[in-house]
Length: 72
Image (cartoon, rainbow, N blue to C red; front, top):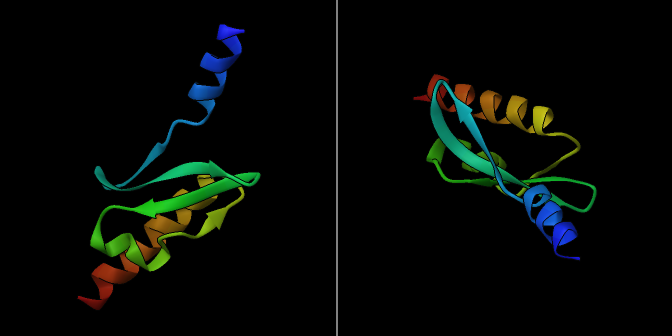
C-alpha cells in the first residue's frame, strides 16, 4: 500500500519550466493535463493556463517570455 502512495507522489510533483536557463514557473498535473503556475513576470501572461503535455506548456512559456522581451 505504501508503494502506490510513493508512486502517486512522484507523479504529482511539479515540473519546472525554464527558458534560457531561467525558471519561469512550474506545471502541475491537473484534470488530465498540466496547469502552469508562473513564478517570473514574463510568464504571468499564461499563468493558470492548462496544457495537454509538458512540452506544449514549455513551448507556450517560451513564446510568452520571448513576446515579453520583444515588448521591452
